[in-house]
Length: 218
Image (cartoon, rainbow, N blue to C red; front, side, top):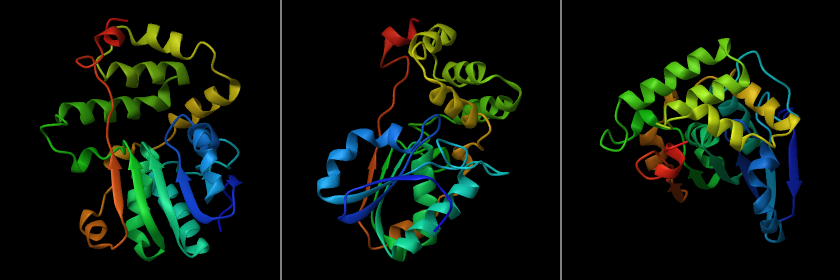
């Protein structure tokens, strides 16, 4: 097992939950605690987030090995990932498919394998550029920069409104996020995942200015 912090609930079949950026385990998956009546929920904090120690290299490159090691240590588990944590889950599942009982990823950052019709190439390029600039920005300015990529007209106003009641822990997670490598360039072994026998579910959604003009007008 790794030295990652984890919140554990329940005693049933293990479910390993991997959060996305600007968050941490129980912050992302707290609403799923009711599932502890049936499962053993293991909500990890990825490197540099929540109560887990930072790593020299933060992001999917380190996280994939952590998650693969946790799966192997558990023997096998259901694997759930959200956003960049979904990307980590996809990469880790391809490393140790024998340790995965099922795989669910929610809005994973997988620009490299997305349909160009759904993901114009200029969008991931803009995200990547904003992410690279993150090292030289404050946490707030970084949030504004990546929000601007979505097409919001006044990203600064949106961040001010949505983060008005942010806690110290929230801002610590935002700070960790700007040091994390961009998950959009992670290599997803689609062939290995397709060949694996475990059930797989991908949940997609998201938003942009065309779908939510009320947000875009901010």
